[in-house]
Image 1 (cartoon, rainbow over the protein chains, first blue to last red):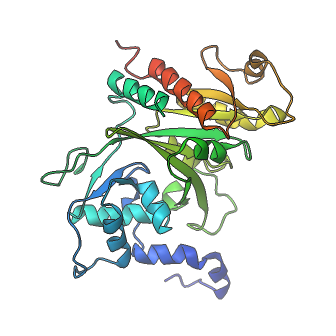
Image 2: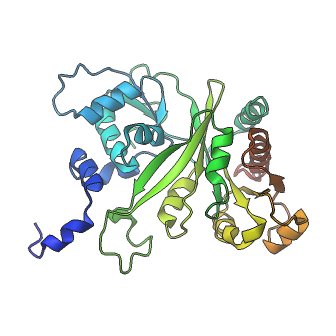
Image 3: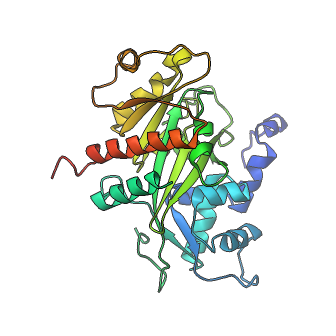
Amino acid sequence: MNPEWSPDEERLLDAPTIRPYVIARGRTEAQDRFDLISLAVTIRPTTGAEIGLDPEHQAIVRLCRRPLSVAEIAAHLDLPAGIVRVLLGDLFDRGFVAVQQPQPETDVLDERMYKAVLDGLRAL
Amino acid sequence: MAFGRSDSAKNPPKMPTAIKLLIAGGFGVGKTTMVGAVSEIRPLRTEETLTDRSVGVDDLSGVEAKATTTVAMDFGRISIGQDFVLYLFGTPGQERFWFVWDELARGALGAVVLADTRRLADCFPSVDYFERRGTPFVVAVNCFEGAPVFDLDEVKLALNLSQDVPIMLCDARKRESGKEVLIELVKHAYGKRPTAAAR
């Protein structure tokens, strides 16, 4: 703990910020693993009896029965995207979800994709 | 990396390819309106929190409370069949949140810069940003009622846009109009794609 901590500093840390970081147990290192549009889908449902899974983990597993982006999960659960990345990392590591990263900028984005997207937009 | 497009699952379910498009421009120019007009879902809001990793990227001088700065972004989604899903992100209006811009722009197919002729200068930072970064972009002039009507060539000149950057009028409230803008953007991005020059 910071010995120079003073009660005055407390006001700088508002509760809505603290709570998510408690959920993530202070971890932020996983944040760079997933993009906002990385898609997650549940591949193994939770039983509710797993050790080390918080209600927020369970909520993600339930939510991702259909593929959802990190941004969507964050919006639905009302959590900062960074926290969702950490939780998703846990679920990925334990085999509950599959995660698909978006295509790297320099890669693919091939003709077929542009054509499909254009056709899709025109058909909207 | 230990994960990727085909990863840990024994039989990973088929997932669509996610594509990111950005809607940028000054505060109140209609970014969220446009997102909402074309999105198949009601626009959602996500928050990024400024953490230690961003220090040094963003100018934090004088800001003592680390990890408490949050930036909200509105976004929408358009599914293209089973294979693709477009995510449209309104960029945060405050240009000091460059760290979020960098993250949003990474891997983005392209960007729409929304302009308001009454406050044209508001979109300069967006134009500068995408030019510098090499992100394909189009400029869409949102037609606000009562706003002076300029010739698009004049606007282009005022923005000092390079000749090949498409510019068009739009009504951010209308789905059809937003659709046209996105089509123009994807066509433009197609011509600018990294592999295009090499072929």
